[in-house]
Amino acid sequence: MATMRVVQVSHPNGPFEIVERQVPEPGAGSVRIRVQACGICHSDSLTKEGAYPGIQYPRIPGHEVAGVIDAVGPGTAGWQPGQRVGVGWNGGYCGHCDHCRRGDFFACVTGQVTGITYDGGYAEYLIAPASAVARMPAELPPVEAAPLMCAGLTTFNALRNSGAGPGDVVAVLGLGGLGHLGVQYAAKMGFHTVGIARGNDKEALARQLGASVYIDSQARDPAAELLKLGGAKVILATATSGEAMSAVQAGLAVNGTLLVIGAAASMQVSPLLLLAGRRSIKGWYSGTSIDVQDTLAFSARTGVRPMNETFPLTRASDAYDRMMSGKARFRVVLTIGR
Ligand SMILES: [Zn+2]
Ligand SMILES: [Zn+2]
Image (tube, rainbow, N blue to C red; front, side):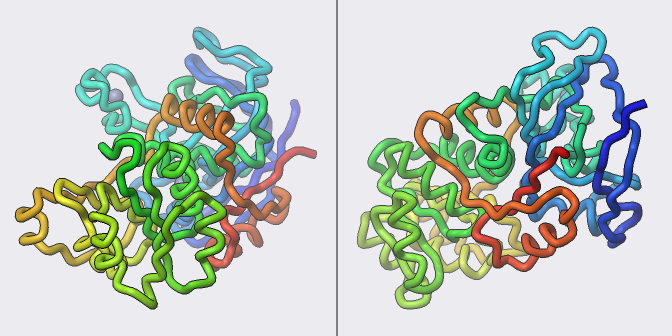
């Protein structure tokens, strides 16, 4: 029986363990993917720390998976061995619950989460339901594609559903793992793109990524600066600071939206600001496999790429610590295969 190397967590807050397991066989409706790269996302801490309700151990984390299908389970339509594919946070949906029947597949009542409700991509092989699988274009190397499965997807899908049109002022708050992709997507989508971060040392980066305006939120009031541009149609809040989100909301244009994708614990909201200008504050779920596929295709065509630090699978623990330090520029990716 063939074996594979995986990195698992055996209990909440337990260490990453490198172990050998049997290579699993795909069941009905599933595929087996030979993993080439897997990004490390802050949400992997839910698996590491046991913060996801009902999570069972041992569990292999990882929901930014890039690889190649190498086996297809019985009755699995539409996929063949040899196809380059990716799997993101959404680990599949049933297709027949009420939410699915309304087209809200992301809200499936039995929806799965890759690397949390089943084993993820810190491994040489992964089994995924067909509904979780996205095609990966040939011109995207696995290491560059992996962070697009979650960080890229979340920013791309939020922006394309934000209601902003070409030429509208769209600000991206935060220039980290999410924000450095958000600025690129906003610029490629034709928005008047504004980068907002702390300190003037980020200005060159913001402009290199495609921002035409940069606002140093330490030196200037970001809301006042946005109003000088006519106000923002959309502010994509990628930072995890509720204070930073509160500080920009007054920079929204009439009918503008603060689109929240950074998981801050709380923020202050001005009801008067919302009702007087019909402004809104809204969250956005990353997306499902077809959204991943669109993200990958758009990125391949337009040249949007993550900036990565790479580690081999055997150094998953160091890689995870690097991600958690907040110092990585900007995504951490495991390279897999022996
Ligand atoms: Zn993620
Ligand atoms: Zn469903």
